[in-house]
Image (cartoon, rainbow, N blue to C red; front, side, top):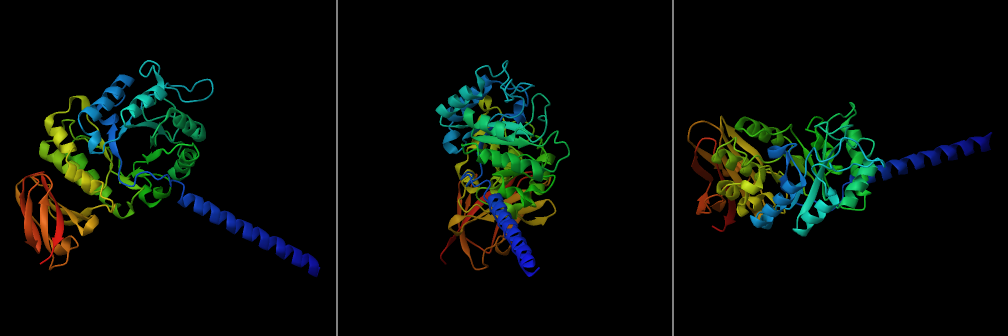
Length: 398
């Protein structure tokens, strides 16, 4: 009996150690699941959905890649050309693989990938963590994660936007890690963008499995939608970091539903918030104003700053707001944002934005490219309705 008891204790201890080791390994794998070396700064590029929705074809994608290069936007950091929904056939092929729609992508995705890569750009594609994509025009990847990830890798895909429609009621915490693991096992580094719409607070769990995650529903090309989404995304600022970013959805700049100053505010806030800068307009016909907004090197530099800390709203007085965040080299980025209908003076005090009360700074305006030297205690400026002023503050010696 003594020997039997000892034997049972050894078996129990062995099982306990095995379970503990398994849990440790599983936990480690979870933490490094999306350690793909991508997204050290927020992704920059273009996506087809906001402007074209399902009206896409391979000619459009090629022309957009051409325009990205010829306009000079690629030289400013915009690299991804992302195809959204509606690119595939309604049914899988005889081998169960996703297939490009013959009528609109007759050359296939691999040929398109080769073309985009020849321009020095990267190609992104779209699928869904459900039985169908949101358009219901093509199958989703639920239950086909490994197969589809390998297909994307064979095609030379660099980016996957993964939507949340027709999900059978299953938790995204179950569905999204499967595709994350499949991408990691695909043999190719593929940026993983979770489009879960913020329904189950993905900022709290998606950092281990994806490079970015949507914090909100879809953006619309109007002031109310843009400002609402900016506020919703701001809630999750502390979760953003290099490799993993909050995503308040794609840019509407240039689509015509807002004024120049509203679009300037849109682009400025997205840049400060370390949001993905994914252009959503028709690059082939963008006007000079749109190009000037999207190509501002100094605003882009705030977004791409290597420190990788998301700026956030730090002060609110009715419709008058101050947004700020730290940058590398001990600098601070500041936005004075007037969300009201009347011109107003807005002030950011040093205590509002993390500066010591004795700090003396040079305040550089990122839109006028002018510098105010020797600024003390606070930064004030008149701001027009729905407009903003954006600065970087650099400390100087007294």
